[in-house]
Length: 281
Length: 347
Ligand SMILES: Nc1ncnc2c1ncn2[C@@H]1O[C@H](COP(=O)(O)OP(=O)(O)OP(=O)(O)O)[C@@H](O)[C@H]1O
Ligand SMILES: [Mg+2]
Image (cartoon, rainbow over all chains, first blue to last red; front, side, top):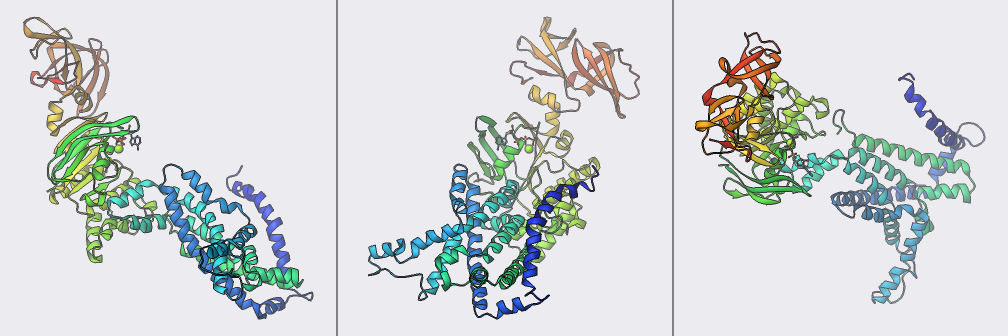
């Protein structure tokens, strides 16, 4: 077959698939977001943005992403470096570390609820040790910091592994000779990490960060389980518009706002971590 | 002062013994070439000296200091890697300056040294490029420049010019040698190119299957190979061998000829002569010419003597046809003898 059209023929099936199951629903959602029954309008957007819960749920979502993603990145890098250094047992450790990936986000939220709730592990442990006289309700409006911390911990526990697997694969691709050369030319282990591993890992870092940041903006089930209505986030509000208030136009507008934020961050990440032409392995 | 002493170094990879009991001293400012066939352990020895591989047994000393337990950066060495290891994410400038940046030298000093070494390697016009935009030979020169920029006591080079074209290689060889002599650097240079070894080395160490067979000056290695392996490895084409049997009155019978040879009553020996030390004469070996190759400067004739392969380098004006029978006589003072049992030279 003609070499010029062959690539297009090869991506045709996936293009059709995406059009049917992604582009078409996307167009439908956009139509819903930009109309209230009488032609094009921005009313839905005006409505959701001016609602009093919008700024706080936006702030919570961004704060959570800002707290969780950097910790996950650091942890994933540390774990990936450790796994990569291992001779024996590497696969076992990797499997164990990735177990949380197999647990749904709601289940993960419930696991952490079992730890933090009034009759949970944390309370029994603390009263057992005599730190508190009677169980404390951590996940209440009196302890907003603890609620935030619980959600952040659950997210870190649940979703660090997705970055880990991407970074392990990326680190494994860096040829050993570069580390040897760096060592001979006087780079300490830390310098080898910052001057060799990090720059050469940029493509994997891009993928891991984009994936993780997008997922962070979509956080929902973990928050629902641990924070309930105490900690409103964008996705939770979208759900509320659709199923509690039965306002699908507003829900669609929220969905598009989340999409817009995700795209903006993706572009920033791709730009910051770009690899100059000719500088690939 | 950077005298390198390698004492009883051996290396095994699993069950495979890559190096057997290596003992070698490289004098301060000496240019030592490690020469040997692929897989004989040259890179392994170099990597042990650099600290990238740990010797199974043995010690390495540099400048009177035992260094085999130090990390590579504390050994006062720099290295040109066989596969270059030019960092793909850094420009040529930053590659050459990598070690200098690690030493936290001031910017203008880094620039000065990078530009100087890049000039020596003729890559000053490439400083802004990435390694993905370089040819193999250019990458190799970046690797050499990076090692030179460190101005080390000892430089370890693993086939640093293997990827250059013949002309550039000849030029680089001379320049590299000059630079290292001027900077009083002790150098270990790995190659499997004999011409390179002969032309650059103060001394050549010929390696074979993880052992150093002979370590001597180029002319010594060429004229007086200490073992049959060296004789058959060095020289292009290498030495000719013929079996010799003891004959009457202390002489040796070689392909029907009576020759003066070593005494000592050995049962048999091997006679050896370099192809260029043979002349056409009235008496000598009867050689049937098989292949005649005019090489410009001279004529390479591959023949058969007594059923053995035998090569002669003759004057290029001679007309020799395949099938012709030549009478070849060896130059007496160039004849060497080897003991087939020990494969070592016999005086
Ligand atoms: N990490 C390793 N594990 C197992 N065997 C190895 C390892 N490194 C080298 N060897 C073996 O040790 C022997 C010597 O290898 P080395 O790289 O030193 O050869 P060399 O003389 O540099 O060859 P070349 O001229 O092809 O570069 C080879 O047989 C090789 O297969
Ligand atoms: Mg090698």
